[in-house]
Length: 499
Image (cartoon, rainbow, N blue to C red; front, side, top):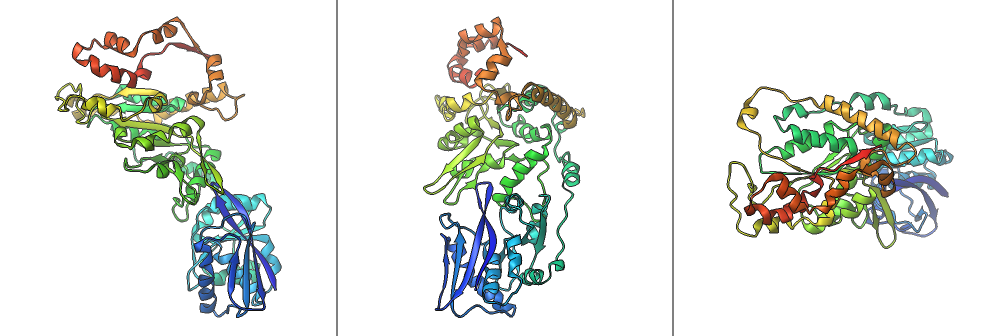
């Protein structure tokens, strides 16, 4: 008897419905066809054990399982449950097989029949609704995540017997209901960190407020202990709250990567990712034999913080150049190419030299000749050119640190940022996909940012001349300024009229 069930496979951040056909024929041996990977091939062993443990039997004749479309590679263990149900139906141990056509089924089986969670439940649910399936049956750990999709009955199950009973009596399970809006909006402003924890550094706070308002990338340059990391970690607390659309996009990426906690729903706060400097280029931008999102995609609609920027491998940093421009990354393999969104704010921090105390007001730099230049050369010009704000962070005086005065709250700064974003949204209302100043293209720049005479004269000066004249540096620093000036060129004041 030939029976069809329906599963789903995730490619990138989208799901594709897979038809699982099971047929019992004359002969012997079991076969799975349709480009299965090893995890899918091994599913027959898990299916056999789980069925026998619960009083059912595997056919002793030839069993063929086909996963269509056959030209797409099938990966993972989420096909265990649809294969098991198809086997029961094809061997006539389960009636009402016509109900299989109404549901997408996904889940990994243990040998005793318990069901383990899967990755990508949210995109699977979205695709199931798009294709007008009545419902989705999946592990209970993923049920709340999938239940965010409305107009779809989502059933969470913990054992194969629950699924078998459901197809005998559909009233045996109750659909999971999640009030998405209430849960989403109630947790948007629940932060453990706040800008009022930071003593002093008012100019740095102002720079980060400007970066947050326009969606700009920024780099903080200063000695150790000046507060660079502390400031960067609080940036996400002043960003505008996620919209429902942004939250859905972000949750899909984390779902595909398996980063969502069990029984979670929509991600309500903007992500903040801070990878270690030993990260590989694949882990940063995504990839692998089965393409998975990297850190830049996990930071989509949020902040990517790279602490101690020169300590990252140069090749790792260079792979970010194109995604920072296009706000997406395309991972291409021989048989598949997937797009992962990567619209993030890059916040980086670094010391001015290896020892960290070059130009420190109180401490002497102990770096040998040439070490500063070598240290700064680890960061390429094209990457620095994509960082809009270069901010020098200086240590806070002891008197200010020891004072009991509290700084401005994140909520007050966030209100100003939200107001600035609303003005930008009105400015770019006829340009879909553009909602912040940092996303403007060259055409919009010419229309909106009209440079005045002072701004036009500024590029005539070299960065060394401008900063030597402005800062009054002595001759000892001129050699350093040749590199430091290019590093800080975007920090130079720019004059333009904004429409």
